[in-house]
Length: 98
Image (cartoon, rainbow, N blue to C red):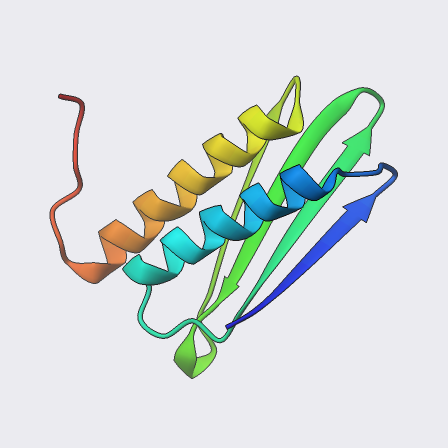
């Protein structure tokens, strides 16, 4: 799977880039053969936004975005949102709070 990382109006560290790739690789295990993923980091007027677009076979695209005070928190939130979408569509039971 090809992973594209884009930073708009900001600079991201190598550590954050690697963390984003790790999050997407974990999501790819829940998806059925994803073809590519785009991770977009955007800092606009003090808001930190992370969006992940996961391209699946047959033209399906799963998109989720999250906003937080820092990119790390936004990345964790968007990963959870996308995982939720993938679990709903796979027919597997969604894990609830413990």
